[in-house]
Length: 510
Image (cartoon, rainbow, N blue to C red; front, side, top):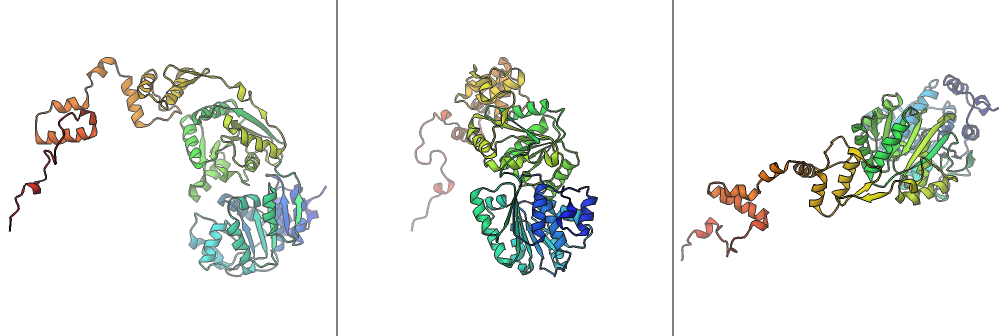
């Protein structure tokens, strides 16, 4: 059995690895580290959660023991697609590089330029950054890239697929051609492979698992649901409550940042211990939210795909896909947040009838059919027409079902029927059905006793009871403009009664 001592790492690195509690390398580490120490270009492909980060951090630490960084001339460059991944790699250098005196600079958005400039001025042995912030510093004349010896592009498929190709090409032109380049990723589709080949020189390909395979330690299930968002939220809540005894912590993925915010508010209203993470949050909030989740202060994290790539949260018990990912490769990364380092995990994905195309693409990519949890789409309760013109599930009963019926009824064409249907149900602000202020007023009025409704007079009748005054005339004219049906007076000629004062002034004739 191969150990870290057999890979050619320096004694300082080996001591740090031992202190971290590791002795046996993972397959990707065993395959990549010896070639990295030989300064070969590497294309490493392995499913997420298999230790790809240490595959380049450990050999880089060994190679950097010789030499010294100069001001504003970094020796190595690591590119990451997100701020969270960049910060995580920096933490790995702190953990494994504790016996080294290396300067590590982290350049990401949401942090002051001045603080980052001070780190660059001292000289950076390791520069970890997102492409946009790196180019910002270069354009300001704060960086010189001619001293870079090693270039690492982590999550290569995501970097290239997210539109970073022009930025990476610009950065690659700033770095010496003789550099060593390392690509690491969980997936590598053929079209991305062609782009990767443009950055690698005679690379050593290390593939320890088939591209886009999922960990065998993760139990995958599909959950059928009707297609409306509030129905999906109800399905998710039922699933969370059913799995409550088994959930240590969970990440729920949505496709859009708006859906992250909506689902977070919904779960929070229903009493779940939940936090949110998406790209529009400032860096301090994102870092705090992730730390609270790692520390166990939050049980559930609702996130966009910003949390799907490479985040090292070692003991996530469950992953829920509230939305089916549009890109099939993202499914592999999402469920890779659980079942890491040999632990058991569970991944559930909510499926509606409109998700069949994306589901087929995912099953084709991973090479297996995912089992259904509690029946497929054909087992969903049929819908029947309700008296108010909306649609009602046969399983819907009680207040929650009536609220959903009223929400559907508001989308019909007859507003009168909608108000009549709303009068049958009491508004509950804690329910997941969201109503506008005007709709809540209409529903509240419809619940009033008939005697109270009969006592309410039209707006125009109240104006008619007022004493006559010029101000009342002005108010009546404004009301008439607002309510055209009350405008039954004679058609005005010219200016009518509203003749401007300057038109009444006689002009002197010359």
